Length: 466
Image (cartoon, rainbow, N blue to C red):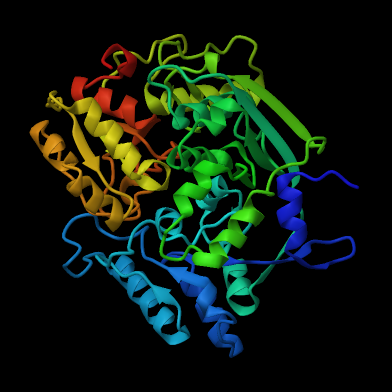
């Protein structure tokens, strides 16, 4: 019998039709939508006189364009307001469940899916957003799609996709003090590059991976796309099952027992063959920080920015252009470099565990006067939990304020923009030129490294203060 990877098992079970010499027609179990990539898709349906085929399998929430202050007021920006209103109207027209601003289920689409139990092992999950790979943490095939594909799924609950190649990245060993899932992700991308995963779906394995909480696994899978991969996944285990149990849309009673039995079989066969394999040691990973303008330009926080020795042609030019944009030079240390803004949030690090880590670090300390901080929970549920656990009092005592849920400064499609030329330590997923605002300079890091920068006002090794 053919030995299969976890990816093969889920993908093959969802193939409706194989197109000779072409893509597969793949059935989709869960479709998530937001206000940015759905309006044109709904317009396409209207033009063709079509209805949403299975509205009960689609869930909507506004997140990219929403303000993170005064959400009870009308959205000021006209385009943002129009997109949010259109999403609500389209959902009402087609019978799609819509989580409105300030409702209990509102938040960033990739945070509310797992919170509500909509994300489950063995599923195929899509969304018009590249960081849909987050949901792969549950042992699901989850990937981002374009607007025309959003329309395809709304109309048919299927999508045409070529089957990606398979990669396994194994990280064994015990994570050192102060090293988080975000550091694992940034380390992997620094090693394999931002194109190293191109054409592949990644399965993460090894003792360092299975030791992660579900929140940590979501952070790791979220960043899979930044290595060029189609998505990332982790085989479900007790940690996964315990997280899903009892959530709103999780299977109940007898159905739960059947589901768990199915999920326990979701793993790669022992002799399954992957197209590409990488192995790393947890011993080699320290808190990471990026110095350039893509997520692969990252180093351990105590290391120096690489020199251009041995770099050729366009690679060297691109590298130097990136350093010029950031105002850095090769061979410099990142430690001690000034910080103007600190942003904690996004679908990468906007979960309760991230705010517990940040609050635990700043407890009894004070925010640096030169730093502006935006602490943005990923959902209403996370915000309520921060308040219920007394974290907001710790944050306020240290000089920090909590904002309201949304994508915020991750992508500058709302009011939260880092000003030109300013340096931001950000717990997000991308540090491209202008990603967090025109001319903004972004350094990606974990919530612990962000907390260290927030209280010292410079890039600081969090381990020295733990």
